[in-house]
Each structure stands twice: as structure tokens, then as C-alpha cells.
Length: 329
Image 1 (cartoon, rainbow, N blue to C red):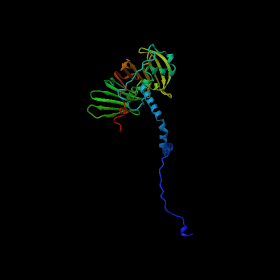
Image 2: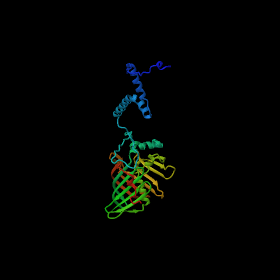
Image 3: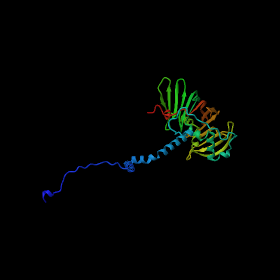
Image 4: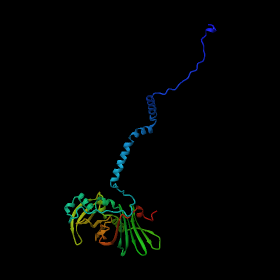
């Protein structure tokens, strides 16, 4: 082919023009792009994507719950039997269910469960007994041929400190849940630890119960009733309950007032073989709660101590530290 016959290869100028798509197609494209961007990329975004449509429902539900809570009274709470109590905690005493009752009969108390129910009822009910955690008693004591002021501090289940105060010394007996202890502190001297006698140990153990030396464990479901009988003497017209400790053991008996089942007399034989008797008299109201005003303790017919009670304070704010031996290592 000759040069004259070759095709022409002159360059050409090409131009482009942007044509805007129709509105419908543009909207569809934008929507598709947004949907593509909203695909969750991780677990958190997935939760957000699920919860976002439910937000209005959840908001209305929270408003309803808040309204319900505000229209209800305060929630009742139960307090654990911890080591410390709130000082000044109010104790509500519930009156007898049947205040018109004249007296109890032996027949209606022969069943153990009925006796326990009646004792709990006459002491204010289960709620009151559970709420009573400590007690402090003040008055005078005649002990060891002397009369002095005393203070007894008691905390559940059986912790106790007894202080006898005189002009020249202070005597303290205590039980910390494991050991008995005794300390003498002269007014112008250092405290010294003394050996506690069997009589003193029994005295501390007897006084260290909120509801009496025998009724306290029975109210908690321990011990068994062996006999229910009537007793009438120069002191009382009462109902006598004979108990045996759980698993056998020493026999103890109590005399209860026929009208309100107040503890009038307690008797047992100690480990040493001596007969111990505690009498409780002069019941009256202390801070609207009925309590004995006089307590006398005998051992083998000899009076060991007598206390006249002037003041009783319940739930005084006791802690376990109060009952520990201050001279223990």
C-alpha cells in the first residue's frame, strides 16, 4: 500500500457532560447507601440497633415503675443479728391477742407447741422477740453481805456483763460467749483478774438471758416439756412446767403466772449437785414493757443475791467488744 492510500489518523477532541439522574433514582441510591452504612459491625452496635426502636417503650415503662414506687409505702426490711445494734432503736411491744383472758388452764398448755405459742404471744409476738437484741438493767444489789449499785448489760444470745459499783472499787463479771471472767478495779489502782467461783459463774449465766434462764432457749425451740401441772402455795397460784434439756440432761422447772405467763420462779440442779432457785417478783412496766422489779437467787437454801431494779433499757446499742475480757491477751 502506498503512502497515499493509508487512512488518516488525526486526533479528535472528546468532551463529557454530567447528566443528573432523575429524582426517584437519586432518592433510591441515597437510601441504599444509608442502609449499607447502618449494618452493625460489632456486638455493641447490634445491641444498639435492637434497642433503638424500643427506646420509647422502655421510657414509658420506667415512668410507670417510678410512679408505682412513689405511690407505695416504705419497703419493710429485716435486720440481721449482727454484732452491733443501733443505739436508741425503738422496740414496739405488741399487746396480747386476747386481753380479756382471765387465766390459762393446764389443759390448753399441755401440748408443747401450744405452750411455746402462748409464751411468744404473751411476750409481744415473734416480731418483738426477734427485734429485742440487748437489755441494760440498773438498780441495787445485795451480794456478799453488802449493798451496792449495779449495772447488767445483756446481748443475744447469752453475752453478759455485771458491774457492781462501790466507793473504793468496781467488780465486773462477764461472759463473752466462750469464757467467764472476773475483774476487780480499785479506785486508786490497776485492774486485776480474779478467779470466778461456781456460784458467781451461775449468777452470770442466769442473769445473761433476755427472757429468763430457761424460757430463752425454749422460745428458740430447744428443750422438751416433761410435765405441766398446777401449783398453789403461799407465794403463787401458778402453772408449773417441767423441762428437760435437748438430748436429755438436767431437769429444770418454772412457775408461770396464770394470767400472762410471766416467769415467777425457776429451779434446777447445778452440775455440782446444788439446787438453785431464782424468784422474780414485783412485775411492772419499764418503758411500756412488763418486767420483774425484784430478783432473788438461792443456792441450797441460802440466799446468794437479791436485786432491786430501778431502770430497764432495751436495745441500748451493744457490741461484742463490750463483753470481752479487757485483760485477756
